[in-house]
Length: 341
Image (tube, rainbow, N blue to C red; front, side, top):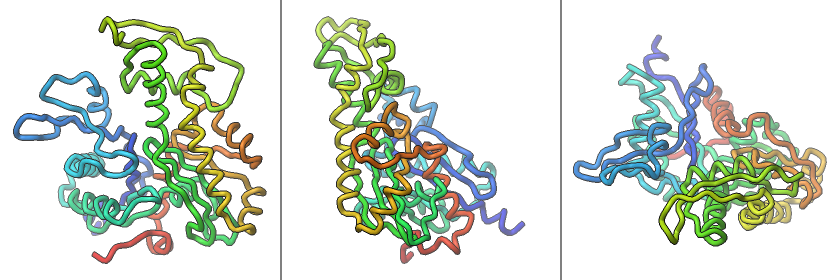
């Protein structure tokens, strides 16, 4: 009983695109877009979070704006991030206003001490009793059921919304890693700028994401059907529909895809030869939303010559890995980045 009163411990994957929450003993209980709708007139207050707020992007009246509190994997708007975190914690804990859970939060491996501090502070302000931090690639490896504490090398590529994390893991630690701020959002932006340049058509965020998911690909495939996209004509200002082929979208997103491939190659280049041998044997594990982009695994296999495995459920790998830490914080303490609070 005492334990249930203290509030169940939880893991939070605070992502640029989505926030997922795992509660000890219950699994993943929440998966919502990392979006907050804020009233801009005084007093500045949040009016909606998650799915509800995402529906408002690009559709709000003048006095409400829908914002993403995280940019490139780190907190860009502290107040909004803290309110969002608090809302999600309360949603999960319902009725337990005195619940003070211990929280494990996932952060990109390349973040600075200041950015890390902001994540911790947001956790404490949102009502955590203790905040632990785990690096995303490590959480992704745990969530993909890799044996991270063995002396063999494992390589994980986590392509999220704001960042792509590439890491080689051995003996419960990250041997070499690279974090680049090119991922799902950058691919969406590439689609937007392509339509602007080619067709003088303005697209919204939701539309560009939809195009990426339906006809986007990272490697030449048997070309699928053309797709119709709707946007606003930049010259006349009127709504207009144009047809695009999957080949042209593949060309449009080539730059961010190449940046991701280069990050993987650069990390392989810095990997000690013994571990590189293990990786050639065991392959590279792909996680995150970007792992679902058509042909992403093919492209990496083609460029590196190493087998590529897409994690069982790539979208939840990071939060499930952090959840494993919650389930046995004592044994996984070595992996977590603790603070001296």
